[in-house]
Image (cartoon, rainbow, N blue to C red; front, top):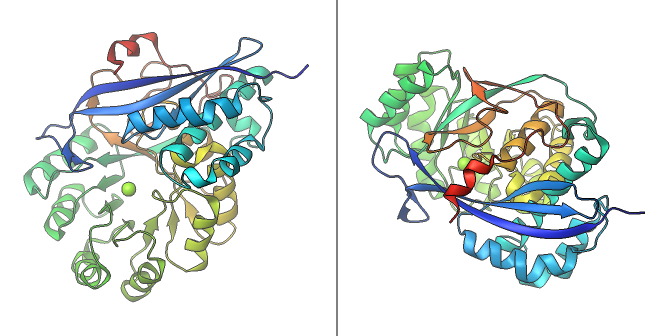
Length: 362
Ligand SMILES: [Mg+2]
C-alpha cells in the first residue's frame, strides 16, 4: 500500500543573531532576527519529514502553503516524484516565483527526508551516493554597510574560527581590498552585491575591484534577469560571475549558462526545492559551469544543500551566514567546525530540528 502525505504543518521561527555590528538591512528594514519557516510533513505510516521554505516574508509563504499548496498535496504518494511539477502547473497563474513556489519547494525537501527515512538511507544515497565525506564551508558575512572597520574585524574573526573562504555582502572596492588585506593572497574571497548596479556602473565598479582577485562576483547587475549585460560584464572584465538565487525554475538556470552569463550557478534549495536543485547541478556541471547552491540557511535547507554538495560532480563549498544565533539548529548533530562539516550519514536529511528551537516560534 502506498505511503501518503497525511499532515502538513508550518513552524515559523525568529531567531535573534549577533553579527558584531549594527543591524544589517533586509528587504529595506533592519534585520534583528533570522526568520524562517520549517515544514513538518507527517506520512500515513507516521514517518515525519522536515523541509524549509524561503522566508523573507514568511507570512505570505505560510498562507500559500496552507491555502493553496496543502489541499493539492494531501493524500499524495510520498514517492510521487512528479508531484512538485503537477502542483506548479495547477497553481501556475498564482505565481511562477515567490511564496507559492517556495512553499512547494519546502514540501519537496520534506519528502526527500521522508523517502530517506523510509529507505533507511541518507538523502545523498538517493542521489547516487556521496563523492566526498566532508564539505568545506565558507563564511558568508552579512552586510556591514560599507564599513571597512566592521568588515576587517569580522574577516579576521572568521579566519580565527577556521574558515578559509570568505564572502562579503558589500558594494565598495575599499571593503573588498580591506578583506583581501586581512585575509592575504591565498584565501578565496567572493563579493555579493545583491544586484547593486546598472550595467554601465557595474563595468566601472568591477574594473576597480578586479585587482582584489575575487573567486567570483555575485549578482553585480540589476535586474538579475538581464543576462545579456551580465555576460558582457563577464567577458569584458574576465572576472568570474555568479548568479541564480533569484531564479525560480530550472529553465532560467539553463538560460544563464547558454547566455555565457556566469561561471557559478546558484539555485536555492528553499526556493526551487531539492529535486530541481539536484537536476540543475547535474545539468550545468556538464557544461563547464559549477553549481554552488545559494544556502544561507540554518534549517533543513542547510541539510538539503549539504547532501547535494556531497553527491554532485564538482567539489564546491557550502555557504554559511557568519553570525552567532541565539540557538543554532543542528549545532550538536551536524556541526560546522573549523570551516568544515561532515556529510550526514543518518537516514533522510540526517537530523531533525531540536525541540529547543520551538522557544523561538514566531
Ligand atoms: Mg547572494
